[in-house]
Length: 121
Image 1 (cartoon, rainbow, N blue to C red):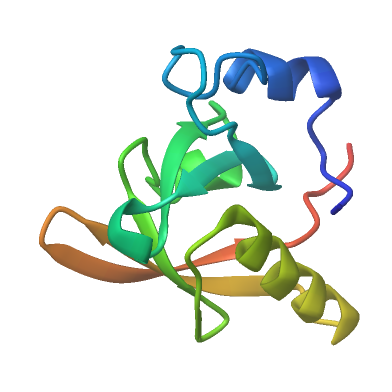
Image 2 (cartoon, rainbow, N blue to C red; image 1 turned 60 degrees about the vertical axis):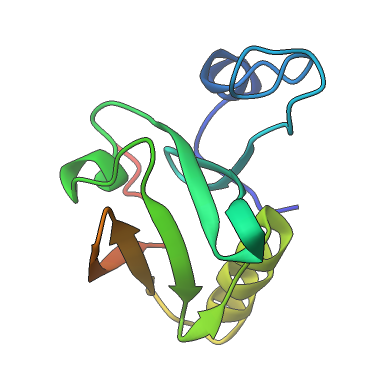
């Protein structure tokens, strides 16, 4: 698992594990894959759906929002939170400071770069 900037209670507040991101029992549990960003598998095995964006996070600053679909991470297609985590860890291992995401919002797609390590203050 990746080391993230959110505390466990913050992750739980974003998506309670016992109920999943939709609040319904049995719904897929959200995974916090980058600081301030939680996702679940996308529909039809295409991308991962954003289910929570922490306020004041870089993801929020870059205008990622609930319902956005992340299609690629570092140029590789992703369809599960685990695949996103694998790409993030691969980028970290390669010494990269950020990952590039291809994000779909409605009918539009755009690239978004997110830093791997948030600044500690």
